[in-house]
Structure formats: structure tokens, C-alpha cells
Length: 94
Image (cartoon, rainbow, N blue to C red):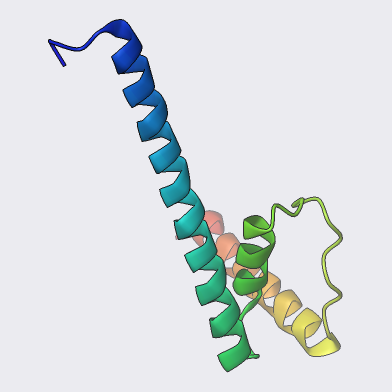
């Protein structure tokens, strides 16, 4: 680097940026490919896989949440009740 001119340094920087961008693009494609194959091999993946796919595709996180089934709603409500009961026991009295 000591013997390089300012023009050569700028060319080198640009070349390295291009190489970095190529690597980032290749890694992104590979992650998308892995996610797609994982979704196809196991269609019952959790909701987090959908979130990962949306993030990779640049989807907005403000999108409407998918409707929960009746069973999922009951589970969620039960979890809330248990959490509230535990909180009340811990905060209420020793």
C-alpha cells in the first residue's frame, strides 16, 4: 500500500467493494435457497420460518397477522391466565 498512488488505492477499494457485494449477494441467495428447501421438506414449520422468509424478501413487518385457530386462541388465553396467576402469587404475598 505504501507504494500505491491515490488512484490505484481508489481502484482497489472499488474492486474490493464489488467483491464484497458479490459475496453478500451469493450468501443471501444461499440462505433463501436453504429456507425454501426447508419449507418444502417440512411444511409444518413454525411461524418463525414465515417471519424469516418475509424478512428475507423485504416484506414489511406491519402486515396483518394471520388469524389464529380456535385451539390456538384457547392455548394463548390459558397461557395468559397462568402468567397472570403466577405474577399475582409472586407479587402478592410470600
